[in-house]
Image 1 (cartoon, rainbow, N blue to C red):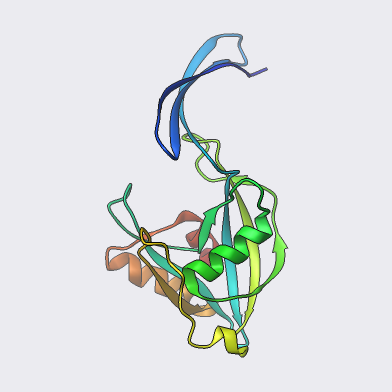
Image 2 (image 1 turned 180 degrees about the horizontal axis):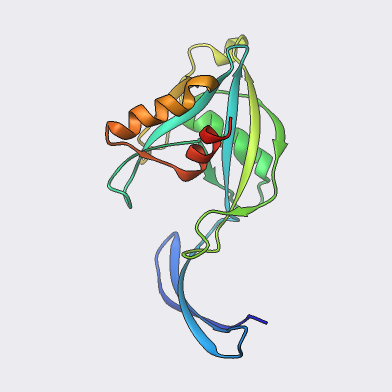
Length: 183
């Protein structure tokens, strides 16, 4: 049975640390694995939000330095200590898009890139009543470091829109791409 024996910090910054994991594999052999860990948060949440009654999906375009390009993805954010998945989803949707909505469901933690990190991601499914005054002419409340643009796409056109944006050179987040394939 695989078992973690030791985690040794190799380097850390404000938000991340690089660790070398020593583990015993299923054959009893000691192995090494490099991994990253987030600091100062309890994982992340992505927000799958639908505007009603138009049935449009809320996605964003955001510059992601590790890729060197803008990515098309769901709104998302890190879960700070002391906050729930639901509270974080509501806060991040408002900050990144200007919209307010209601939580329809949340999903247990899943893992996005487990060969690189143990960071967990929760999915919050939200609904936005676009007829409410607070959801008309919305203004995002972006932090100074954020470069985010909201994109609204009809569910039945999402796959085509992602293909179009990909051909224009934008990166597509894997979670969003998988969602588009399955709607």
